[in-house]
Length: 216
Image 1 (cartoon, rainbow, N blue to C red):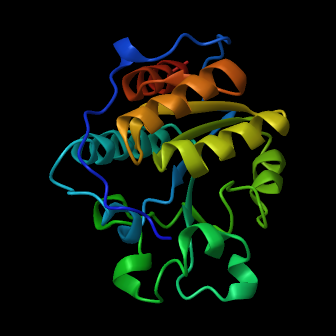
Image 2: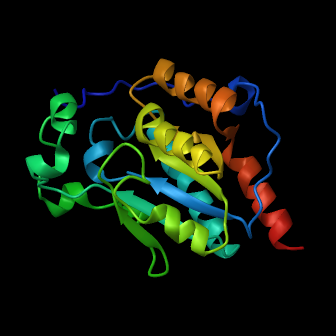
């Protein structure tokens, strides 16, 4: 009833990504970046020295740095520790009690810490939009694109992308800046997103688009 220990698997590469139904392009003045649930608790289920974690962290670091440089707002989600049964509700049936109220578990991993100008959203459900003012923040800033990296691809990352679609926002799921329970579930998330609610992209393509358009 908790997250299983996760075996190493190779990070999917752009040549293996599914065909997209849409041809959306990341635009710096329309986009925000979401760094999804990269808390120590969730990374501790992996051997962090083995694939896909080093590539996940490196690509997320690059996305964060380039988005900040281009003036793209950076948001993080983080689940609180010591959630009450009232707060967790049905999550407990699937995942148990969740994070303990310990700073070393709740914190965003040290290599990807938020900067002063970034926004950390409290995460309560699979989608980053639930029980949050995330939608309001994005729309009040006049933006309508959401770039997503982090964990876990087939759970919160995918459900956030799907909800963005339903809120009339273009979602970009960065396929080589995600990690999951397994390669099969990682690929399932990319396949569903590409066919139903988002554009699947790689980190290099996002960075190239951000840098090119930010210079115009």
